[in-house]
Length: 69
Image (cartoon, rainbow, N blue to C red; front, side):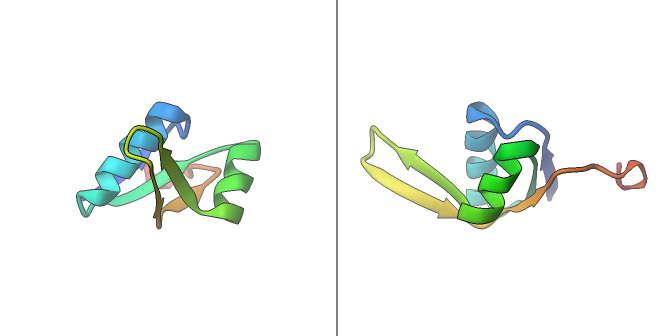
């Protein structure tokens, strides 16, 4: 399933992580510094309770074209 996560904050990032692990085609819409950081360093989540770090492959966009909706 193709899914767009509109907010790439803490909750949106975790939602995207769970959806990616469920074999969904996830795209994050991020802006400004968040977009630059995701493009540069990939999608990294540090799980403090489980003492692990996951790196997911995710598409990142910073603009949503009207005809794509």
